[in-house]
Length: 317
Length: 186
Image (cartoon, rainbow over all chains, first blue to last red; front, top):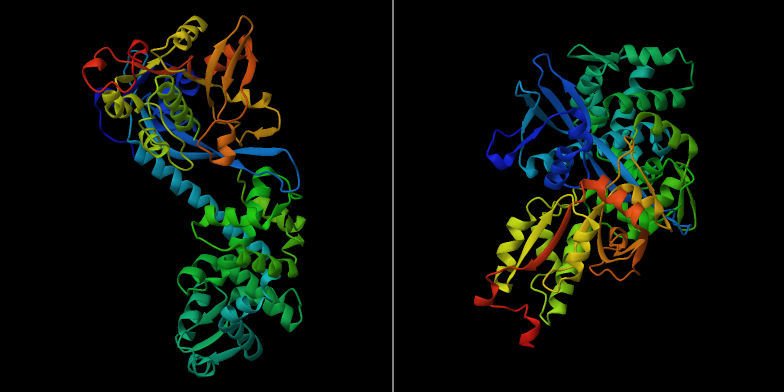
């Protein structure tokens, strides 16, 4: 991963772990790659070389919109880039230093991974809440139908499902649900898969059963539903949620108040999309109706249960 | 934005002191410091990138490690040198009223960049571009900050071995386009 450019100005020599963690070698890394750079881990390999993992620190204003004090949270993002220190055999190590572009790219990718993970955790945490929002229900409708019908009939020919849905996507949906273990498909007929059968042990009424199964489908197939079946609505609401929750999680404060403008700024920053505060406000109102967040006038606060669930899955600070 | 903001203000003050216009915009200096959102800026390549831009004005960049208070005073008092830029350890933030900086999961924060302009017997006075983190402003217009020399020395050393950067009149400048005029030419 490290560059092989080994000109005299692109090599770093140091003599101890301490020097690269807190000494001149660390200063050189900060001055070269940005003041947020730090060494988050050092491993010694079997041939005495060092594997040096860099992290990056990013400041973020996570002030409460209702309080005067400004809270500046520094986010430590680990493992953005790996350097290798070669032992010289004389008690020193030499690192070939990559371009700043390479290190920065590592940081950008790592940050994106964290946001993606957060969106996924949020989608799982709020699915049952947003299920009844019309856009979500509409987009999941074909999957909901498949689960409900197969549950009612035990075994249905694929041709009948295709005719009934008339959307042209039925076979692909069946295939994905079969791959995930929710349906059983032999090429002609569709029946309940193991995971649908397991859910029957819960002895739920029909509506609750379908809702539970779909919840599990979302949890286990979030990425494939979104990317392969293009069910973008699954990510749509979590993005608005996380434009609030990301700050609350970073500040570790579920009672943090953010106003709509602050949430809008976060959305634009996290997802790189321009959006009007009117739109954000409308979405937040919808989410407040489903109790995923609490909203008092223009101020947003957490639902403590959602906060707890996402915090357990996605440590972000 | 601390380093570009500090450098811009140092350059403007130096130009103003010599009745010249500032040669570079903040956007130019962001490029020179290779500023990136989330990645901050870097000082490592500032001399190599800044000097070609300012050599026609007869000035150049200087960097010193392990500077002393005597060095700082000498830079501040010299009309042919700009105010210095120094780094302070992130522990400095804890002493700033009205802000609540919090370290991340590994405890790391950013070190900071400030512009000292007076070294007294007991204290150091400096400008702090800290506000810019929140406001994205290009000017340092907050009131000067004062800390004891003891505290300042500790933070200055812990950040990066008392790294100090400034601009100064280069020896060959009078032959070219000396926009930064000598006092006796005015």
